[in-house]
Picture 1 (cartoon, rainbow, N blue to C red):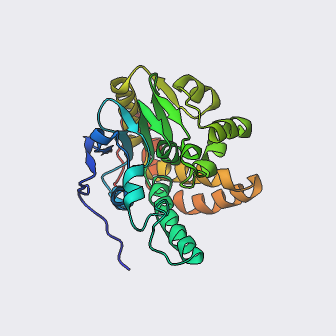
Picture 2: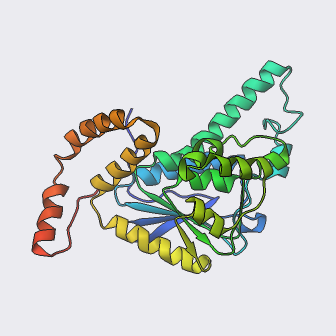
Picture 3: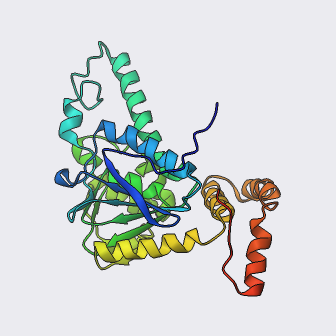
Length: 288
């Protein structure tokens, strides 16, 4: 099967997409009138968008944000989900018995998980700007990103128990590994209490605390531009190997890294980076 390698950024009716710099792409959730809440069509579109941007050879870093002043995202659009005849949260989903309802829900959940996991699988590093309401799905999304710029006014919450379910799109899988504190994770997940940027920073969820959305976006752009100035072979390998380190033993990861770099050290980016450092010039790397 031929892999689609786009020369331009994809189009979308649910997300605003563009370049912020030569190699920095921006994806903005475009539903400010609904606090950037998500419905089913959005997550299928999101998976496509992130996959294609990740394949784009002109992109070296991605920034994800939410439109408007009030919310990064308030999470799932519960009203639309409840009205969707195929949604597992709709009691009248159309399935004739318990087993069929279970299969329908299972497929639905896996599709949504796959969409958000694209952020983690993406070949390019992803920064997320979190402002205002950051409920439910916001935590799923942010923990699948690489770094998180959180505003001082942000209100974060693992909201799912308040609507009668356990979070199933990634928070319970990734949040414990991001912060490394199971007691704190159980606290916020079991109570659905709202917490702020300062607490998020103390446990390691927030990478940086920012004065407001504009400041967070500015810092995210600076971070992305710095990442984009590095070898794309090196940044892709670093992201991938760090994610693998989370899930492997030290010995397994060392062996995996040796195999990975056995191939990647053959890149021309290494002599280019070393030569640029010695001659005190800016390195020039080929597209990836």
